[in-house]
Length: 496
Image: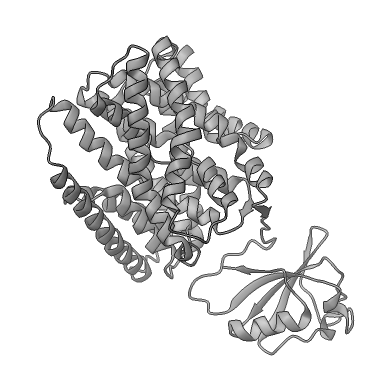
């Protein structure tokens, strides 16, 4: 039995990875095909209907995804857009839930479903946040830059807005289950504020503790144990924060943000491990969700009608209105930027995971909520997920994001600055040999890339326009920038 189960999951993972390759080639979100693979196996081969197990798997996967997203986010990038990101992640989520909840309440009555307002608001709250797994994977796999700091804004919003949707979902589940018993709005607001503050505080504290421990524990016997240690901190951050009435999802994201923006030994190994492990978490989460699908329930007229209507309203009305209102105080964003933020409000695994809570809690319309959320997620991934790049190009917000050719890992303990630059005509004005270029002291060109070949240069090496140089220097940033300006170099990439 165990061998058969292992074989099935091995096949699932293999097919999912192949689907991801196909998705990249045709410009579709890989996570959409992961979901499709799970649905295919669920419909024809595997009978899996455990919402409790799915909820647990989703919780573990979200911890990894949120931590990895925070770890990859540079605080210097999100600092300029911290205000609008926080507003979108809190007020934007609540406003979206209110708009969609009102629409569901009136539309359901019109088509004969007659959902109560608390149930309608519960359904809206489960899908009020954008999905971090979808946004992180799509934006980073496209290798496409976005002007006006839009990429860090979208990543900050998607990484930090799950706690708000989670709190709304849990609150409304308790309201619906209590069968109309009075729930204090003031008490709920105070509880929300406390959970967010506790989550933020513990997330920062556990992040600092993780950095201190990893940098000082000195595991000489096996450096691979550093990844195990950091993984333990990830799950500890979530579970301990939740245990003391804080928001675990926010704590995990902030822990990742602190770890990723601190000096860390074995950084390259840790980043590589979490990159791969995050993809595994995403694949397993989407496959498991896909296995839950019941085609008969999904294709019922009430699910199709309500799901398509809610999906259209969410994409075309609720999300744009929430973005417009949330970003109204921030004048730095152009109309095109606001339109793009409105469009890239992808829904993914998180809303579906949240939609399992009403079922587990025994809410009367729990299955309807789950199926509608699943359908809305499919619509969002198909309509919005496949047009992330084309919409950015159409609005004139995209630019080509270059990656360094030299893939090197530089420990944080090394103080020298590593950078990569391209040889231009202006650099060769004084001669074509490396010795003819005015390079300051304590600065060396240690490697050259030319036509996919790499070699170590000497002073007599002749340079050609288009060569890529790997430069290491002990000079400060100001002195290096003066050198770049004097040589007419504009395309410089720092390597860290």
